[in-house]
Image (tube, rainbow, N blue to C red; front, side, top):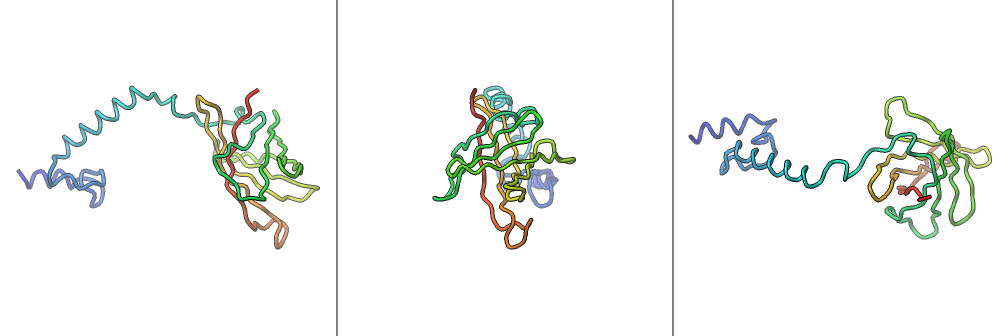
Length: 171
């Protein structure tokens, strides 16, 4: 019996017993463990439907004003920005603290439909690239990603950046 349990358990991926990455096969038969995991997942999916968690944002969901959500706090002295996206997906990225306004061109991805990239310019100079992705929740919509700072030591070169978290402002 022990050899049949071990041979069944070692049919997982690589050296992971049961294909689950846990070493329970020496004491618990893999099939019973898998049944337990399946039942727990079935109960969780009934209690928490998939739509209750989140849905990926798509281009039409971007239109509106996005304000800092506070999920990614910034160091003192680093400006927070508000992103306002128009129906043509062009945007303005406005500093909440200093009043700078950058005009942003949307650069749709040919390979990703849930990653959104804007090149933001100040007086014709490409200063910031935003790379964001997001989700719709029951409580609202969120964008997370990175703000890349460009232009030092040479124009177009990345010299830093920060994580960004924005939420869609309610109308």
